[in-house]
Length: 254
Ligand code: ADP
Ligand code: MG
Image (cartoon, rainbow, N blue to C red; front, side, top):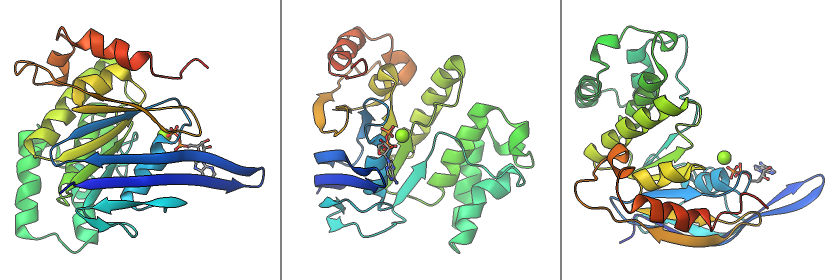
């Protein structure tokens, strides 16, 4: 069974200026363990597509299935992570990573132990009493991911998660976040407009056209076993070919 199935999804937005056709006949499937990137020009509807998969927005036409059942509204099996880490500045790190569990009434011993083990594994255990402004951008992004993982989602949606970071930090944080997701055994769908980031993390890259956007191409990625992290993949001989294949599909310049 597919973890996620998007079936013939269309979305039109109605505005005072008229109707905008944003997504046009989008179908895709995601299997357990996949890391999918969605790439496309700015404004083509990438965030809209993630919102549809998460159940936040209902498509104008078409359906989304999660583990075989049609999605109807927000679902706790889905974890969402955004470009800005969205930590609360007035809460320390521990309160930030545990707040979602508290709200959902799931702040039990097992959950606390899981949170502690994640903080320990990812170098944040000694920063529990620190406030977000006292942490680096990378630490904040890791904290945001840990907060999301604490809810045990079956799938993670990442909307340009590294876009607010400078280039060097971005490479490092992408590497860290990828490894956290993989060791937690999670499936992920990431929106990005960075081709290299998509190639370095993904099992499949989906290229969207400009609006009204449809799927222009799906590129399956395979690398040798030794290229098992985003930073190492950038060194792989196949990297450049994948880059060129995706680059020529993108409508960035028209
Ligand atoms: P992307 O994430 O690819 O940059 P978005 O999904 O944010 O694109 O937006 C796609 C298009 O839909 C844009 O043209 C945007 O202006 C429009 N749009 C997004 N949300 C709404 C909304 N709630 N109402 C009307 N138009 C919207
Ligand atoms: Mg967006």
